[in-house]
Every structure is written in structure tokens, then in C-alpha cells.
Length: 94
Image (cartoon, rainbow, N blue to C red; front, side, top):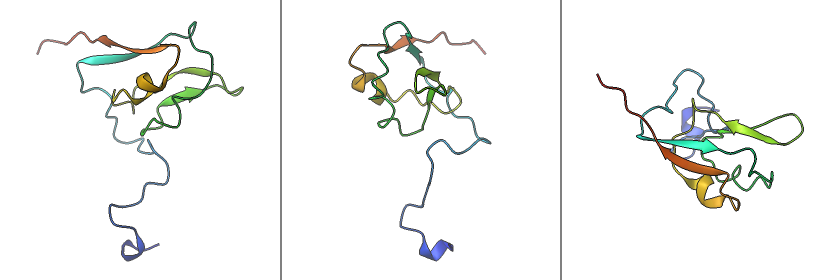
């Protein structure tokens, strides 16, 4: 496909496909995953624009890929058991 055939706005076939640029470290809050509360409903997965929700080989959620997560909060809103929530991040002094 040439650039002329791409739809306006570009084309990203897989969210979070950039291994080169890690962008999940710029916000003063941190997404926390509580595995004990998770019922593996997978409602968080389709709403994540960065494909940061991580599953094991059996379909169980095991965490969040911090290299791609932007802490947008869409998964937090979708989670019925509050197994995903925000915690205030500790900022490093420069």
C-alpha cells in the first residue's frame, strides 16, 4: 500500500505496535491492576486504544504493559469489579 492509498489520518493495523517508542511514563498517576478482584470478563481489553492489557495463554488478564499504557482511564471505566484503578504516582525530583 502506498501513502496515497492510506485513509486520511493514517493506518495503524495494531494498537501499541511501536516497540521503538515507549510512551507510558509521562503522567502523575499510575494504573494499578488487582488480580484478586479481576473476574476475567475482558471488558477492559476492547476499550484500550494502546493494546496495553496483557493476557496469559489461557485468556486470563495478568497485567498492563506499562511501555504502552497512557493511563487514559478507559479500562478503569469499563471494569465492573474495580480491579483496575489509579494510584497517585510518586514523581522523581530532577
